Length: 559
Image 1 (spheres, helix red, strand yellow):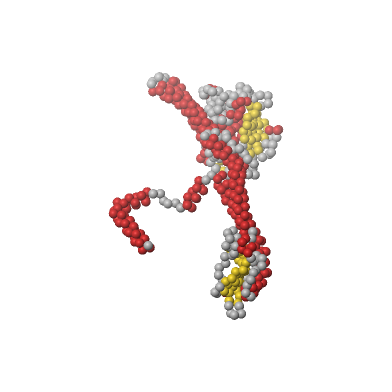
Image 2: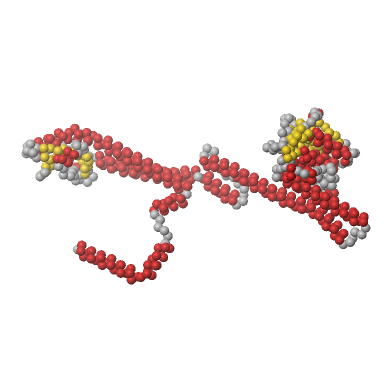
């Protein structure tokens, strides 16, 4: 039969080989293409890793919990079963250790004397020699527990067990025996082994029942742990879902959304607080960028509008000259004067814009000691020279006179006073008094400059915006209503470059007071000397919106 089967197998193999050869190179190429186009084989470990990566955090946590709980229960069950087995076997082993040797000797004596009936006992005894064996056991014990299945043992094999008890199966299903083996030697030289055993009775069934109970209870505990753990994890991760929904709303454009805050003692709570802080900064950044873009658009529009008027005037006068409309020397002279005035105004506006750009870049001029009292006295003298009918005086803040020296850029600080005094003279009725006040701040680390007038004042709704560039209450853009609206913007920028502060208040009794506070130590982190020599020149530093140019400045009511 085996030879026939082998021949048939060989024929089958040869036939398969012949079919392959008959298929030819085309089949081989097709097989190669199929192998090349087929996806690479992935082992079960790689598939399991991919599934784990694709699983949600909730599923991962529940799976880890179930695995850890199951592993812990398995270890506990094995430990408990082992300890129970040892505790149940200990009395049996003690009994065998104490009585087995005596039972074996009695059995040998019983068999040597010719045998007979054995009394009721749970012991099983098997005496084995090289040629025969004899078994002694009680009938009740055999009916209840059967007889142990012990392999044949020689005297040497029995001696090798060293009298240590061991467990064997039984001829009766569900029963176990605990046996011990001893070697013996008869007077006639016969050697053999004696096996003495005791049934484990209900020990085996107790262990089986215990194992089944532990398995059933372990399964129930794992299932309950998975259910309760899943609910707990889902509840704990619920804020993450809210964070996800909030992020989706923010991505849709609603930057005002915030993450619900959980207790700070939890990881989710700390994450929510950090995200809310980040969202607040992002919203502020977007708001600032939007406001900056709006200011830039308004700035460009205002600058274009301010430049369009003098440019249109220059072009119009040029066209008149080209068309021959200017026939007399007086007309030509007047036209050239107007062109010159328009060019001067354009140059003044460009210089103002250049000064603001340099200040925005953080450039500092030539820093050094500057006495504000001297600058204020010069500003009062200039105002008296320009408008002799206007009362102007220099006052000391708090009645304490004397030098007030600060570290700063003298050219730019002179421009601050020139713009403030010029605005006060231009936007108040003739003869309105103007005071320039110099003094020290309350903490002694700052110097104070105030320019007070007693004119109509500034409406409260416009006070916060008077330092904006090109801002004017009057919506008209004619030069008759005031300058370009850069005077106070330049003042604010210069004061800010000195780490100072400028504010507008109402003068007691009516009018406007502009208060400038400058640190005596000057701007922080800037060394003395010509740190920005190229950025400070006579053109850019000259007062373009102050008293020296009546056509420029902030319109009435806005400064």
